[in-house]
Length: 158
Image (tube, rainbow, N blue to C red; front, side):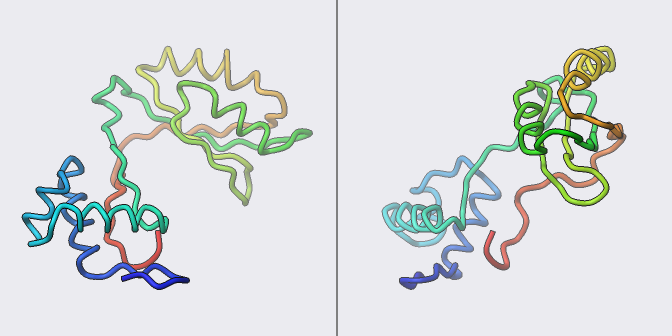
């Protein structure tokens, strides 16, 4: 399963991951019963995968279930300021779901989740437009979410 230098996920680890993907609240005992293992073995394997950076159990929620009916992606170009500093400042806004420093035709990519278009307008005008160093913003309203998953099959290191 694990070597001193490199952690390798085996079939038992994959089975544990599959069960957690189906039910992130499954207890070690429930997983153990399904796989014919002991709860201690399951606990140990989960801990080893987490320690090796191969597994992280997180909760993923639906945006609309929390009252966020408007999603917008914003591509930002930064001038006369560190991109990382601008991204850090932007990340402090409650409306911002994710911030990524990227390469290409713009510097920062972010996803904003708000309840309605009035809130979006206020966010863009009263908060985002006041961040020092923003040269341009290219917003794109999300009209449909085709895929948003963190439970993809594991074929190699995460």
